[in-house]
Amino acid sequence: MTTNQINTLARTMDFAFLLDPELIFLPRKLPLVSEVDQTARPVKYAMMGIGRNLGTYLFADGLNEAGLACASLYFPGYAEYSDAIIPDHINLAPHEIVGWLMANFATLEEVKAAIPRLNIVSTPLKMMNVITPLHWIITDKTGNTLVIEPMKDGIVIHENPLGVMTNSPDFNWHLTNIRNYIGVSPNKTGPIQLNGMTFSPFGGGSGTFGLPGDYTPPSRFLRALFGREAINPIETEEECINAAFHILASVDIPKGSVITDEGIDFTQYTACMVCNSGTYYYKTYDNNQIARACLFNEDFEASEPKIWDIIQKQQYHQLN
Image 1 (cartoon, rainbow, N blue to C red):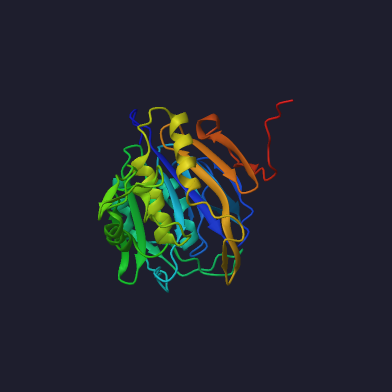
Image 2 (image 1 turned 90 degrees about the vertical axis):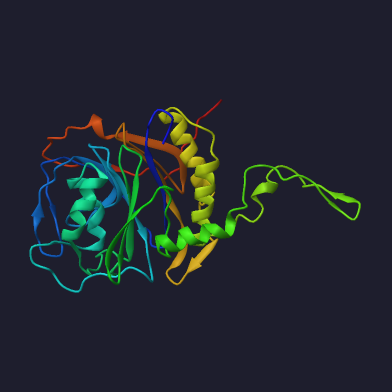
């Protein structure tokens, strides 16, 4: 959050499966239909985010007109879902949660009150034919943050004052892991004396020695947290966007650096959602020019959604 109380949620989307996403604006009048019980639920708040139309509109992340922003993150080895529909509950597939959150809630308090009625049912995502293991990070205009995790013993809600989350393990594990790196600092370390000899650091950045540089989720969590805590105070939305994209550059995965059983895992897009202005910023792996769209420039009472193709071809500012 900036000194002017501008709050953002920024994320990288890293996956081996090519998502081919679109930027989608969904007005209030268009209901979201659950794959689980075919219930058409009205949309209380207009929303915008990156997703796909797969019979109904599914979102990986986005924000709504009230300033609530959320994102789904991969949670393999930990996510546990229900095997059956529960009457008198909100029965949803894992990949429907982001849309449900944006459609219905303005604040984190409202989200916390609704979670006991939520039943997440094991349902495959059609485009991948797998049940996606997910957890979710959510924020609102206050700057407060929640992490929602579907665990073996039920859905767990974590208050997240750090404002950072990544993939597995679970949130409490990541909190514990921070204790291994409490000596990391943006400050330069001083020289030391050993038996009359002086040893000085090679240059700036010596305080960050030990900050892990690999692409595992725990290490990327720590780099994102370090960047968030070390960044200079920022005031405006433009400064905030600039800072967010620079911080996330430290966890960007180039093609070929991570190979999984599913293929080459890489950062397909990077996005930043501004809760206050309703603006969605993004860039893709193949196009580093940042694009943006503002939710408040659209008609909330429109009868149809609006969809923008993601520009994948690199855009250049021509100088001569």
